[in-house]
Each structure stands twice: as C-alpha cells, then as structure tokens.
Image (cartoon, rainbow, N blue to C red):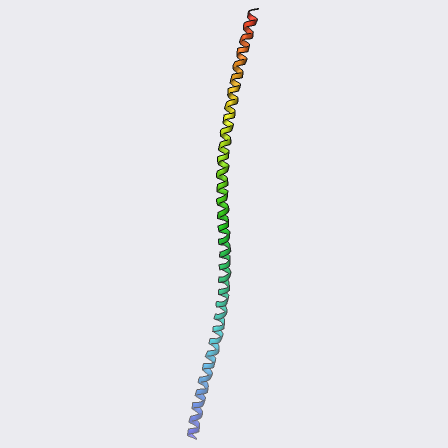
Length: 120
C-alpha cells in the first residue's frame, strides 16, 4: 500500500508537472502567435513604407528633371529677352536719331522760309 501510495504521489506530481508544462507551452504559444502577428503587421507596414518611399523618390527624380528643364528654359528666355531689349534700344536710338534729324530739317526749312519771307 505504501508503494502504491508513493507511486500515486509520484504519478500525480508528474501529471501536475506535465500540466504545468502544457499550460506554459499554451501561454507561450499564444504569446508567440501575438508576436508573429505583430511581426507580420510590421513587415506589411515596412513594405508599404518602402513602396511609398520608392514612389516618392521616383517623383523626386522626375521633379528634379522638370526643375532642370525649367531652369534651362528660363535661362534661354532670359537670353532671348536681353537680346530683344538690345534690339528695342537700337530701334529707339534709331528713331531718336531720325526724329532729331527731322527736327533739324524742320528748323532748316523754317529758317529758309523765314529768310525767303524776309527777302520779299
């Protein structure tokens, strides 16, 4: 009977020990699943962020190309504008010269007319 009681106690302790191990494993399994879900969610977010950054980087490269093109067009426009200003200045100077010449001719003609009127 003592042997039977002793064996029952050992069996009960072994059974309790096995239950404790199963309970611990179940808790660890739940924790492991939670961590796996968190890791999977973080990996999805990382992939989404990586793709978003790739898209942004592509837009940035495209924008830099556009900005470079706009700078080139602006430089060309500025050069063209400066040439046009020089041409207009030249035209205005020519008009000023022609106007001055016309005023001089008018003065000469008036002077000739006054001289001819004075001689009459």
